[in-house]
Length: 217
Image 1 (cartoon, rainbow, N blue to C red):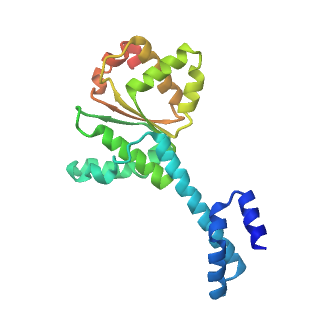
Image 2: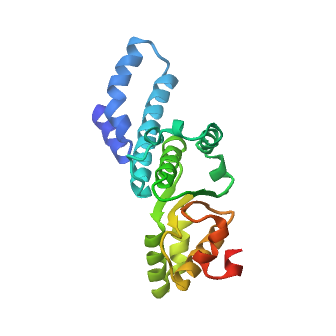
């Protein structure tokens, strides 16, 4: 019977159950646990193992540096009001509501660390799909996709994430073509995917980024 059980669990792709069903059965026998509770233990352990593996996979796919944690950021150095706002962001409600998050500041002020830390927390706590990408690399990838007539496919892939972190927009001067594909991506994401963005330029200077007053507006 044990051979058939293990064979069946393997065929059903339930590796965690396969590894623990015997030890849990012994525990259930010793504690006179009902069959339903024993089954619940098995299902609970299988679900938790899969959740951990899924989160590990999403962290790897996110391209977020695992060293950029919220603990390493030291929220204490922020003004109390801003620290409270960051704690509110860690609930993930702005992602669920498809809202955007923009962080402005000079180079070296911790913008990138903070966004990666928020993204990592949302993945770990709420199993969200988040992607981190420097703006310069994103633009290169989008232009290549446009050249190969694959831009809609590239947009669809990016919008498969609940949150898209675009780091350092406006840090270097971009061409008009680069800004056009970025503008199109932002438009496509509107009310569908949250954009989390860092920039060293305030909104008042975004005409330097998009080159066109109407596009900036």
